[in-house]
Length: 146
Image (cartoon, rainbow, N blue to C red; front, side):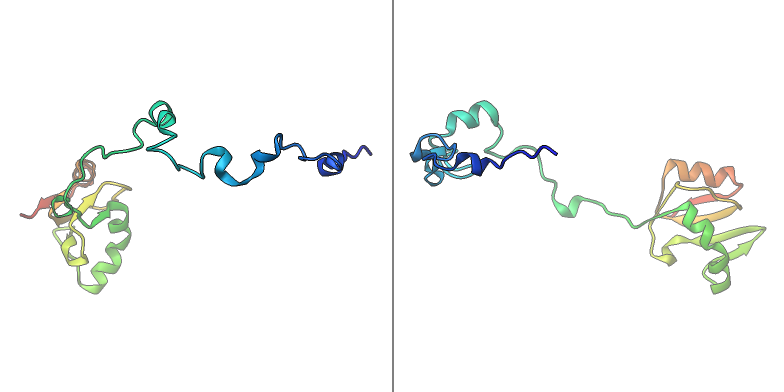
């Protein structure tokens, strides 16, 4: 089996062990500091050439109070939970259609992920387009509450 000799073994006896001039190995001074040091001073040309957007602010940060976050629920979850909700009395059955106000469950918007297998009358603040289509396709109704 061929075994390569370790580099340090080969370097035994050499003065600088492959590091070039002996002054090069003295700390970070040879490379102009560690990391991003000197970005405004001696590494400025590097910043301008390779990372021109390093300094400054870009874009717009929306105020948090303007961002509307709604609690969402998917159709698949509601379809799965309907028997349990009927049992608990949160949902009711009228004219062969399950009536459910999703606000009672702590949700505000209904999303259209998954399938709905029975006609349901859902009440919520908002519905996604796909959710509305799937509910109506199953013979149900999506009622938006203001």
